[in-house]
Length: 116
Image 1 (cartoon, one colour):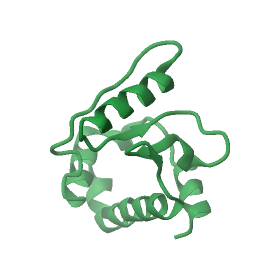
Image 2 (cartoon, helix red, strand yellow):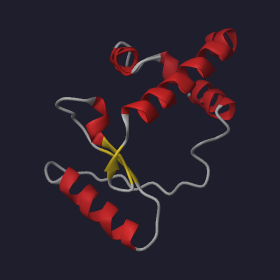
Image 3 (cartoon, rainbow, N blue to C red):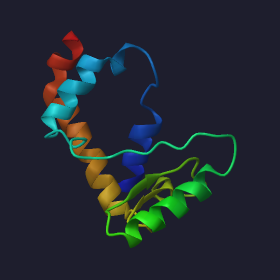
Image 4 (cartoon, one colour):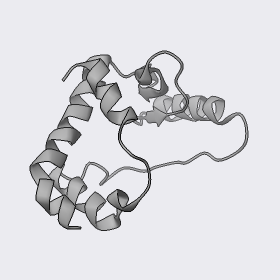
């Protein structure tokens, strides 16, 4: 998979609906070795200043030795510009590999996901 195909795949995936049931998400997470386990998540709410707050918080946590991932929206040029790991933009290669990994897991689960 190349970067542009990964972006297309994300942008053409339907939002909402039955395909996001807890059972389906749990099955997918298990097939991906439970990537969410052991993570502490901070969600920032508000009308303005969320990205700036996320950046400041990321830098503070990073300076204390934490590994920090940040997702902000929207992106203007490349989808990778709104995803950072340790305050550095994720590479197109890493982004593409992650999208490809999830797409392969979904394809491998096929009928199991459809049954839920």
